[in-house]
Image (cartoon, rainbow, N blue to C red; front, side):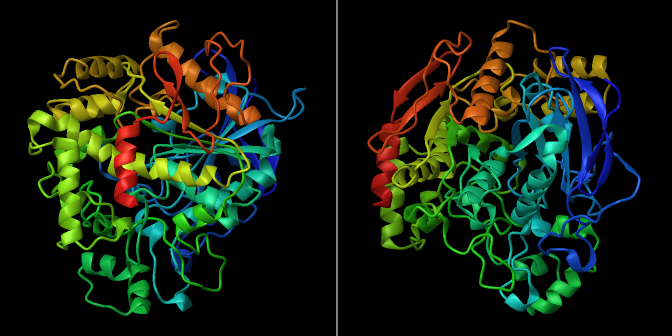
Length: 563
């Protein structure tokens, strides 16, 4: 395979060749701009398509991240110039004698504050064993993507980061055929905040016709952490700028270097409790001169059936709330729950301190802890509480109301798969998380031999051993990262990767994750969509098992709280 040059609508791009984990070749095109640099007057605004360029754009190196902190090591990264870029990976190009392939469009997570499309976290080497075209995007984060002002004349209603995704999807519609991708078969998929973004796109009228299937992994628009608020004065206060006039605030913000804004947005508390307002995230927009990404509350859109009618996979890991351990060890203010009123989700609109709030808090404590208080001895109960308040019940409610109105199938899953590539569980349960991160940092900065040495050292760090699968542990089965070591063919890890890839790419191709009842890799399992009567689901473990109404007792409890 020679270095490829592809002509797209905006100009020519030169890519490179690479190998997947099985040694098969694919093409890689990195850092392709899809939007103008969001600088000057464009900072905080809805994105504008990139201008065409002359000559051949070098797409052999990754583009910059959007301004933020590194997801693992928290130093400042990224810049605004060309941060609106995407990577395209494909096994073939037009003229190779093959038909157009399904497109999978990845939206990274990171709490709307962290993350990028870089291969250090989302390497394509696993997915490129399947005959699909993969697109991984950047979108603006924190205040840059989610500044929301109340004054409509300022044209910063919020959701710029979500509108970045819309623009990237429009880019796919115009250009992906040049990479052998089918613009009429696009599957959006994401994890955590990326999953909530997938769900918001599923609900937004602006995305109609831009995608045809969706996979939401561990996040949805009904989760308490996935909704922002008007935040101009909050950001100004964090900057020490004593001004409440939004126009003056906006003018001031546009003069600041990115690192000052990143530092200020991280002064907001982020302690993994259910009644906390996280300022920077998607919002319901006030009417303005531009089309709204979201003009109604997500629950109202869902209940009215006004979402995009496309096949959907939605699911969760069995113990998402284990992720709280990382927050507790790394974030100021995060601690074991002592006030159960803080575990009452915001959308219940129960005033803290009221009799209703105290009564609900008492129900929560008794259901999850009986007569005990939360402590180091019963952390598993706390993980289940966090699983339900932060993730599962919002996902459960979404599926429940969507299935009443969806003309397309909804597939529900729970991941219980626990192997050595459950990297986030390893992080959360390490008894010395700072030593673990030192090993990870040294491996991150090292060549292949030294990298494996430090990763092997990290495995010797003592850890707790709770059961269940942590939030984000599904990522390692879809993407190679700097934490990944070589997959041994035939190992449980490698077989599990192939199962995940097969389910996800079957769905991208056909809208059915198990179209072949004779598929030996998937043991002939038939994953059926939910029905109006039951939450049919697939348990993705070392074996694939079907069932109904997962974690029923806990979901029944929360349904009662919401009734």
